[in-house]
Image (cartoon, rainbow, N blue to C red; front, side, top):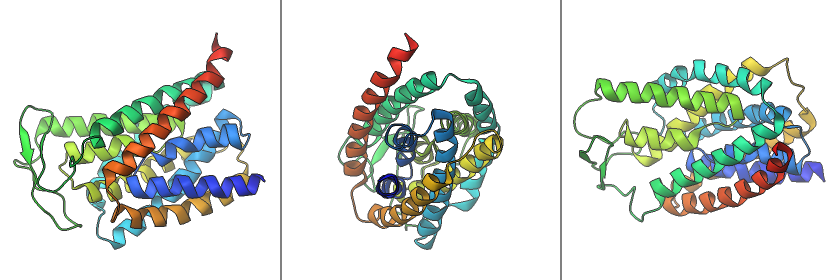
Length: 280
């Protein structure tokens, strides 16, 4: 029964990760804790293995379609290394129930971010004009799948600072909660660097893989990993990510993101209800 659950959950999470470039990984820790019986700290470490390997596999799938910007992705990932390491150290000292309650809050924030970013029909359609956060709209133009969208002036110093802060925050989330942080990376790549949606999804998987590897390196040796659960979960997630990568090229991202956001809200409520009584 455990093996069947691990495979089924892996397929679901891999599908979401491959299709959206993030979000699927945030389900891994609750799934490991509540459905597969893993302790919270062990689940966070196992999640990094599952998410990191799956994200790397998804990166290769997207790369074959020409939707990965390697230089920008590695840069974003490297900028998050310090935050990832710090998050891993903080997580080791945190109360397990506090960790889970914080995870519930994180899921609600992720759902809100997804609904805000993808909640409007046509929000990511080519040619859509959008405010980039500095009060000036940025007109996008059609680009081939392997290219970023051209969005006016070159990256300014203020935007470089925002990229660095965002990358550090994503690294901190990855290290502390065992998530990939792709739900933050995708909007950041679209809004700050002007990436086309499909390129942002592919590149975010590279960032997730780099962050997960860094956080895992800081944890290994301190937490025992249940490989009987992790290995089938990871293999299934890789298969799901391949399907998700193909789905990303066909399905409307708004539809996928909205459905996933509603799932996050339900799951966050469940995790909060289970963990909060232990903290009171």
